[in-house]
Amino acid sequence: MTGLRRFEQITDGGTPRAAELADPATAQAQPRRRLPRRAVHGVLLLDKPLGWTSNDLLQKVKNLLRAEKAGHTGTLDPLATGLLPLCFGAATKFSQVSLEADKTYRAMLRLGQRTEGGDREGAVIEERPVSCNRSQVEAACAAFTGAISQLPPMHSALKVKGKALYEYARAGQSVERQPRQVLIHRIDILAWDPAHPEELTIDVCCSKGTYIRTLAEDIGERLGCGAHLCALQRSASGPLRLADAVRLEQLLDMDEDARMACLQPPDVLLADRPALNLGPDDAARFLSGLRRRGDWPDQAAVRVYGPDGRTLLGSAHVQHGELIADRLLSPPEIQALTFS
Image (cartoon, rainbow, N blue to C red):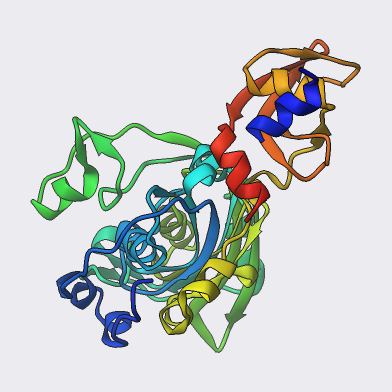
C-alpha cells in the first residue's frame, strides 16, 4: 500500500433568554433540554463578559454547540473581561500551548486606595494622597518590567494543600505562599491625567502566571500611595487577539450554523510556530508516532501538515534532524477537519 493511500485512510439547542447575559446565575438555573452531543472540532474566541466564571462560560458555549468535548486555556476572574479561547474536540489537544503563551492585558488602576484582595470588590483598608508626576509614573512602571518576583495573592486560584487560595481567603485565613518568578515584557501607559491622578490605565504584556492585581498593588507602593485593580481586560493570548473574538450575546442570537461558523481551526493555537509539511510516506509514519528524519533545522516547536499543506497532523519538535511528535491528531479528527 502506498504512503499516499495509507495517509488518505487516516485522513440545535434553541436560543437562551437574554436575561442570562446580565445574571450568570440565571443561566445556571434555567432548565436544560437534553440534546444529542456531537463531535465539534475547533477554537472559539470568546469576549468574556463581566461576572461570569470561565468554567460557566465554557459549559454555556459547550451546550450551545452541543459539543462532546471542550476545555478552556486558562481562567479569567469573574471581574475580568476579554479574550477567552474555548477549545473543542481536536483543539483540546493543543490547549496547553495557549495556556503557556504570553498574555496581554489592559488594566485600570485606582491609585491612592488599597483594598482587601487588591481589587474593587474588596473593602478599602487604606487611603493615601496621590502626589506624583508623569515621569514618576513611568519610572514606577519601568521598575516592574523584566524578570520580577511576585507573591501570589490570597484571592487567587493557585492551590495550596488541595485548596484554592481564595477558599482560604473567604474563610478569613492566610496561608504561607512562595514567591514566583514571572516576566513582564512591557508596560505601556495608556491613560494618566495629572488633573485626575487617581486613574491609571496600562497595557501589560507578560508571561503566563503573572498576577495583574499584584502588579497594580506593587506599582501603587512604588508611587507611595497604594493602589488596587479596578478593571481588567485580556486583549491577547499568544497569537490570538480579542479583535477576532465573538461576544456572548452575539452567540445567543445566532442559529446553530452561524455558531459553528464562528469556530476557527485548531491550528490557530499554533499559528506562531513554524509550519512543516510532510510527504505521504512521512505523514503516514509520523501519525503512527514514528520519528522522521530530514534536513530540518532544530526547532523547539513546529506545526506539522500533510502533503496538501493544509491538513494539520499535530505538533512536534525537531532535534538533531529528527521530527519528534508532541501531540497527534487521530484519524477521525483529521477526517472531520478535512471535510468540515
